[in-house]
Amino acid sequence: MTLLIKHVRILGGGESNRSSGASAVPPSGGSGPDVAAATDTRDVFVSNDKISAIGNFSDKKADEVLDGQGGWLSPGFIDVDTESDHYLTLFDHPGQEDFLRQGVTTIFGGLGGSSLAPLLYGTLESVRKWSGSEDNANVNWHSMGEFLAAIDRRPLAVNFGTLAGHGTMRRAITGEVIRELTRNELSVLEALLRRSLGEGGFGLSTNLGSIHAQKTSAAEMRSLAQIVRESNGVYAANPRYPAKGVHESVAEVIKLAKDVGVRTLINHLVPIRGAADDYRRALALIDGLPPALDFHFDVYPFPSQLLPFYLFLPEWVRAGGFEVMYANLREDWLREKIKKDMPPIDEGRFTVAQAPGNEFLIGKSLDDLKAMYGVSDGRNALLNLMTATKMRGIALYENLDPALVSLAITHPRSFIASNAPSFGDSPRITQLKSERTTRTFIRFLEIAEREGMLPLETAIRKLTSEPARKFGLTGRGEIKEGNYADLVCFKNAEIKFTIVNGKVVVKDGEFRNVFPGKTLRHHG
Image (cartoon, rainbow, N blue to C red; front, side, top):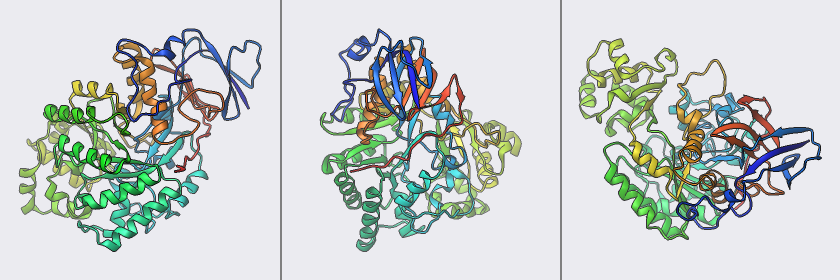
């Protein structure tokens, strides 16, 4: 199978890749050497799944010819923080069209401390808050190797890699009891992590702000981070805030990164409204890091978060798992105390995004819910919603500071990530599609290409060569001969076509129903 891409200006070729931990930014006001060199259009010839030649091929023939009409041709974008595994849409919607239409060709899962492998007991308990499943669905794998082999056997239109979730592994050992590990239990966890990394996991993810991880000791994290460093993997951290302030939480992650020397990525380091000074102090800590430290954070260009309903409860209520939380909500004598201790809610910025078994609620605001339940207090409406959905639902909550979001996405150590799943084109979608699902990378292209907030070549490196280097994706992230043909063509922030491993998967917004995606494995 051959493919000829004609009349494109190439971004992300040649010397785009950098070896330092921080993003390499061209001199102020410049657009970088690759953009300057890309004013003339070129052609790219693809044979099977690889780029075989770059030049001018006016007379060359191929099985398919695409005319880029002077648009930009970039390496396919890499989303380092998705939730398609958590929502199980990897299986329900293997096309992952929401990503492909944005030019994303590679996605990562297993973030936030929750992963689909390894599973000591073969159940998916740790992803119930996203998938909406009331039961612990059984699967036919336990180890990371078995899971990746299962993905190999399924159709997939994007490339997929995963980290091992600290919470998934730890919770299998401790159950619902919130406590420190014994020495023997830590040894089991260490062995489980080593095996997972050896079988293709790209690193370890944590969510130290979750209830089940709050007793994780510094010694436990140091031991696990050392294992990740030895495998040349990535440590991806959800920091402890809001239980701790963002500055203190980031300082904790930085200390571990410095002490151990592990490649580190803070996931969705987003600026909460009302905490601007604390967030700026956190960014100042990151600004002060030595250039050689391989340290990044990811963020998205929108002011909203997708939050499980239970995160609006007081912390003391969230101990013990879904069943305990649900039982507490149904106790009349506890309900007033729960309501009194709930954190403030900006009622006008709350929308129901997912409500399994109650799909008629999707898209309703808190004002709608107050009217529906006949209450005047948004907290009562929210508690009624949680009771009706048995705690299993997701809210779209606009609680981020837009000015600081703009600062974060242009930071030299930031990656752009959706922190969202793809739901595909099924008419049976039971989730409100947020802009993070459908427009994260499009919006970032608009910011770079149309609004000029940062040089276009710098923007493309954030999406391609830098995450490829961080995760060790050999042969991806750059346009050069011999690399995999993961490519995207765009013009005026509009995606013209997306190519995965040499196959055209999306053209003019239409998914072609082909599945050339590969299961990616880390080789430390």
